[in-house]
Length: 246
Image 1: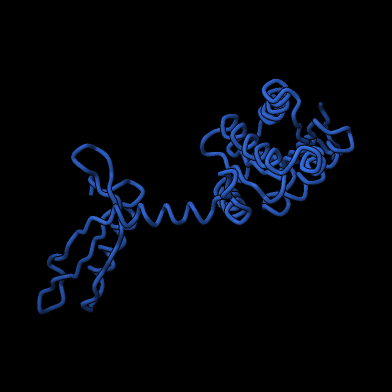
Image 2: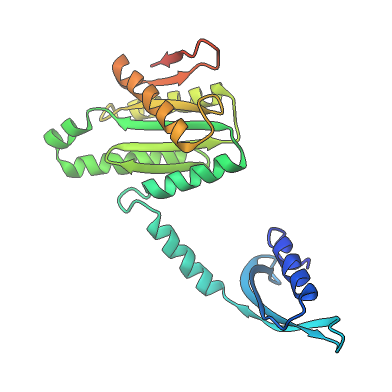
C-alpha cells in the first residue's frame, strides 16, 4: 500500500474490501498511480480476483498489474486539447465553467475576475484581425504570468476572459492583482490596448458559477461606465455598493 499514491489508496482499500466481502467470483479492476524506483509515479491498471476456501472465506487475491502510463498520458493530452482554446491556450468556456464549479464545490471562497478588452472591435476594424488575435494571445500570456499556476484562466469567447483565484477572501489580494494587470498593460504594451475588469467575491456575491458570473459581469460594466481601463470590486458591507478604482 505505501507504493500507491496517497490519493489512490482509499479507492484501493475499497476495492480490496469489496473483493473480500463479495461471495461471487467477480473480476475487479482499478487504475492507480504506483511509485517507481526513482520516486515518481506511473499509472498502472490493477486487475484481480479473490481466491476463496470452500466455505467462501477469502484467502488471497490473484491478478496482474499492467503499466498504462502511455495510455493515460495520451488520454490526458486529448482531454487537455478538447478543453483548451486553440488560439490563446486558455481554457475554453465549457472547461472554465466546469473547473470553477469544481473549485467552488471544494471550497466556497475566492475571487472571480471578468476581463473585457476595451474597444476591441475598433482595434480589429482599424488595425486588422491579425493584430487583434495577437492582443488576445498577449493578454492570456500576461494573465498566466500574473496568477498562480493552479488558478483557472479561461476565454469565454471573443475578447472576454475569466480568472478564478480561490482559497482567499482578502479583498486586497484581488485589488492588487487587478491593479497590477492594468499597470503592466500600460507599461509593457505601451497603451496598445487596455482592459476593464469586474471582480466578484465568493461567498459574498454567491457560491455558484452563475451567481459569481452575474456579479462580475455587472461589476465589469461599472468599470466600462467609469471610463474603461479600470476595475470594480464590490465592498464586503451591508450597503451592497461597489468600490471602484482606476
